[in-house]
Amino acid sequence: VQLQASGGGSVQPGGSLRLSCAASGSNLEYFAIGWFRQVSGNEREREAVSCIGPNHDGTYYYADFVKGRFTISRDDAKKMVYLEMNSLEAEDTAVYYCATDFTSHAPGRLCSFGYYGVRYWGRGTQVTVSS
Picture 1 (cartoon, rainbow, N blue to C red):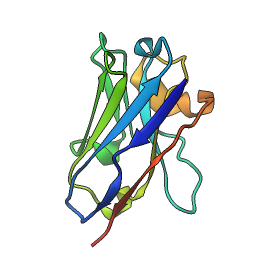
Picture 2: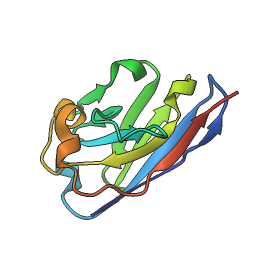
Picture 3: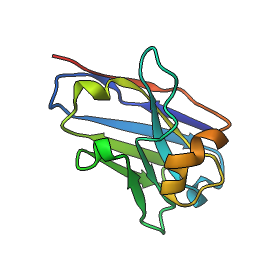
C-alpha cells in the first residue's frame, strides 16, 4: 500500500492550496485517512491536521488550528484524498503527509492516536507560506 501526497507549493499568507493524496492498495475505503505534517527542524507531529472516516460514515476531524480554513474530502472510486487549504498562515508551513493505520475507522481516533500505528509514510509534499 502506498499513499503519496502532492499539490504543495509556495503561497503568500491568505492564499490557498489543494493537496492530493493518491492511494494504492486494497481495503482503504474501510479506514480513516488523515493528513499529518512535519515542520522543518521538528519531528513529525503526533496529532494529524485533519482526518476523514470511510465514505459511508461522512465523518471528519479537524485540529483546532485549522477549523474553518481546511476541508478534507475523499473519493474512494479514484482512491484519492484531498485537503483544501484556505486562509493559509505562515505557521502552516510544513511537509504534509497522508497516512492511515489500517485500524482506525473514526477520524478522531486516527488524528489523535493513529500516528503510532502508521507503518508506512509515503512521500510528503512541501507547503510554504511566506510573504
